[in-house]
View 1 (tube, rainbow, N blue to C red):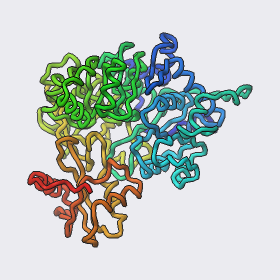
View 2: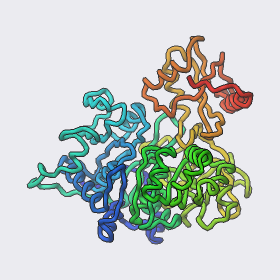
View 3: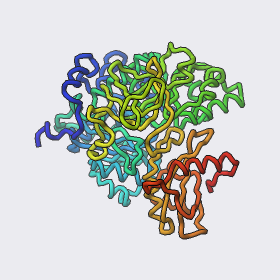
View 4: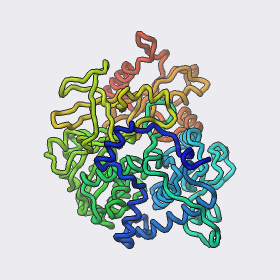
Length: 556
């Protein structure tokens, strides 16, 4: 097999657009590892990562990731291979990420909240030769290497963080003694216009879709985000959201910090109890949160004004992942003492920011405007025609960092891309005269539970595996803290079937906890539309009325 045909397949940009993006300097032909190379030349001893009591300089980050890359190359892994990675918010996430990039291995970085169902789906799509997980995850806590899950993933090499011995991740990151004298095969990143790694879609279908990101397009997104957000060596960024998420990875996120020569401080979770002491200890000046976490921070600051002193260094709070309520947005500066920046982006590409110099009207009321001059945006009605200015419509976009197709999903791509290569995100937006977008809803059958995207079809399919359930429909319901929660309407042959039993059933089938329905409602039959589809709009209206009437949530 030649090098050229080992590259992973993906939908490329038309050559005319690609040449345009290169000519304008968006795509520079550099791998993502170049940011690490530069920092090792400029300030190798500067702090790159702070994780608990551990600290890593850029030199140490580079050396550890290179050791792992060498070991993987000696194992025969390289360009054209894939990896499935699941690590919590620990320094090893970034060490592994750069190691895989250096070796030309394209990873899928699963969230730590993902369970058996998601991991099996990703493995089926990419057929990884390498799996890197953690004994901190309940799925692997036993240390059992012969589990059905690991067999199903099918990776020939499994490295577990927290495991001692030769197949422990720590050993592969640190020990090169046994490789001395061995001829290391040639290795290096994939070319800049090839797949670097896969991002996760929040998609509305039952199978999680994978988004191929090239070095060129993703690196441009990082650099441009840095320009807008003003990152530099002074930046101390708190990564409180799950590290693999697109938002804390590249908007500008940890990669933006590494490009700028700053330091990433890792938090185990976004709660104030975890984050406030870290902000104070490490003089954090930037972080990014989803709206439910913002609400928790505001509650903590409001209930105890003394905690404000812990946030004295915080200059900028980015909020994205879900719509931020105006009332909440107005509280941020008075209670937290920092500036607000709204971010509306997607793992598929397009990222919008309010600018640091924007007036309050824009920052409070909108989700920002596209970051690149070459981000093309169309707001269309159901017939595919442009809407009148100020009217809601479906968001369609293309540009130098917006992908051109999901990985090996030809049928789905035909539905979400038009003939001109514009991607329909499923968001309903309003665009003002200055180009700023306000999100007003979604076309997708998807629930945005505080920034965590739940595909209704996926949960419905799992519910229908229950022997007593004949019909199931998952819909969103309003929630003041999370924005949305989920309600499952079911038709059952067992009148004694309880929510507790159903949640246990879904867990046993490998459904992640955040996807478990917050409420169950049993009906004799699901309402149908005139064309014979389940009337989800009617169900959403029904549950909204029930909540408005003050009936308690069924969570047990």
